[in-house]
Figure (tube, rainbow, N blue to C red):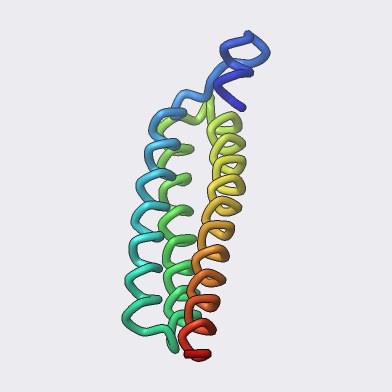
Length: 115
C-alpha cells in the first residue's frame, strides 16, 4: 500500500521504510518459528508462553520505534505511522496463520480420536 502510494506520487516513502519492513518480516518469522516449536513441545502451556512472548515483543517493538524516532526526528511522524500500519497488518497475518494452524491441529487430533 505504501509502495503503491509513493510510486504514484501521492506521498513520499518514510525514511526507514526498508528497515521497518525487514524488521517486521524477521520478527514475525522468528515469532512464528517460536510459536510452532512451543505448540509442538508444550501445547498445554502454549497460551501462557505466547502471551509472555507477546509482552516481550511489545517491549522490543517499543524500543525499536523509539530508536527510529530518535535517529530521524523530522521524519518521525511518517515512520511511526508506517510502523503502526505495518504492525496491524503483520499482526493480522500472524493471527490468521496461527488460527489456521491451531484449527488444523485440532481437526487432526479429532480424526485420531475416532480411530
